[in-house]
Length: 70
Length: 251
Image 1 (cartoon, rainbow over the protein chains, first blue to last red):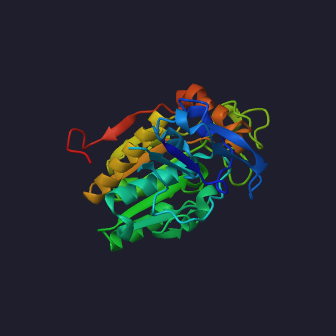
Image 2 (image 1 turned 90 degrees about the vertical axis):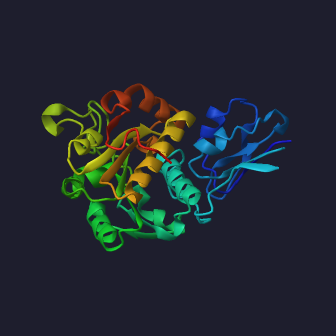
C-alpha cells in the first residue's frame, strides 16, 4: 500500500494538500492541536492513494513524505 | 517502497517561521530541491533579505548571509566577484527590492552582474503587518491604504520583471507563480534555468515569483491562491520577458 507521512509538528493547517489532492478522501484535519497550535493534517484511507506526490509538491513546510509501493 | 517525495536533505529540521500557506515556504523548498538535485550544496551562497524570509538562513545547510534592507544585490555582487565559481542566489521580497533596494537591483542589472535574483512578489509588506508596498495592486486594501490604493496619492504598481528585462545586462527574466501544482513545477523549471545561466557565466538572471500572503491579504490560503489566479495576474502577467539563451540545450 502507498504511504503518506505528515510531520505533525511542522504542519500549519494551510490545507493546500487537501485542496489539491485528486482523491479528496486521504488527507483530513486531526482533532487535536500540535505544539504550534494548529489542527495538523493527517493521512487516512491509504488504500485510495495513488502516490502522485501532489500533496508534497504544494506543501510550504516540506512536511509531507510520499512513498510508493512497488 | 520507493520514495516519491521527501524533504530535501539540504534543509535543517528547523520549523519555518512563515505563516500557514505562505508562498515563501514553497519557493525555499524548490531552491533546496534544485541545489540537492544538481549537487551544488558545497558551492552555494544565499543572500537573504530583510523581510519575512530573514530567518531563512536557519533552514538551509548552505552558506548564507543576511544583507541590509534592500542591499542584497550589492552584497551578492561582492560575493560573486570574489568567488566566481560559486552559485550566488539573491533572494528578495517586494518591499525589500522595489522600495528600499530599487537602486541596488537596477545597478546590478545595469552592470550585468552574473548572479541569480529570486524576487518574491506578494504585493504587500508581510513582515511588518500588511502595509502598502510599491507592488500593491490598485484598489487593494492594506493597513496604510484603508480605502484602497489610489493613483493620485500613491501611484501605480511596479512590474519588475519587465523593467529588468529592458536592461542590457539582463540575460534572463521571467515571471511565474506558485498557485497550483503545475505552476509550482513551472516555477522550479524557471529557477533551475536561471541557476544554469549563472553557472555558465551569463548575465543577470531574474525570476519573479507571485506568492500568496494569506495573513496580509486577510484571506484563507486556498482563497489567496485563487486571488492570484483571478486578479493579480491581470496586473502581473506570467511570461518570459527575456531569454537570450532560448533554443540552447537546457538542464
